[in-house]
Image 1 (cartoon, rainbow, N blue to C red):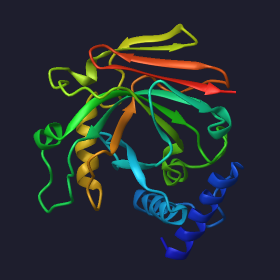
Image 2 (cartoon, rainbow, N blue to C red; image 1 turned 90 degrees about the vertical axis):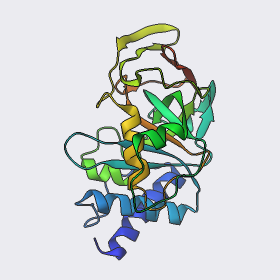
Image 3 (cartoon, rainbow, N blue to C red; image 1 turned 90 degrees about the horizontal axis):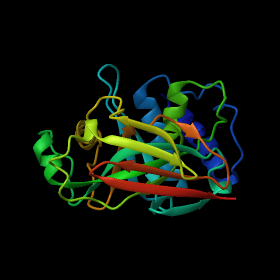
Length: 249
């Protein structure tokens, strides 16, 4: 994808972030046609925003490209968190297993192994707050949404757990409550059944690796639900912990 088109697409996303005005779509001719194009638009958006990347969202499907989204400083919150709904008007929530890196894993020629990544992270319960620069019902492609860092609005992080390695993270019992009422309870639910495997893929796909203190959230275990201002959402993973967010009216 031509660099001028990447810059134009990124500029539209930056303007939407700054003004909170939804985009019907990317400017004509600037929609990405490959995962690499979408990631390049993410990177250019970051450069134009001048924001530090403090977390990632990632997915590694059995078929298709692995993908990542960028999460910026000021949008990662310790649970319980109170986030003004005006900052994330779509108020989407997904309960996820996430990790925090406890040491740098810089890019290297030999891929990091599962064991190396596991030794470098603590695990935690998280809520990804979903809010995209496109309206929920916008007629945009999955690659357009990927260019927008897969509609990330914020990340709410529970207390990291250092002794998580005895847990089968893909088969934990997960519950999701809204305003104190249970709306979901199940075993597992992760798209691949392997959150740690997603973190391994992320580390090895990033051009500069990861830094200590950064997070990665590894895919929804609860599906996506849209809430409303004033709602409180709590996700709990048996043996791992919980996270909670309230959308302040």
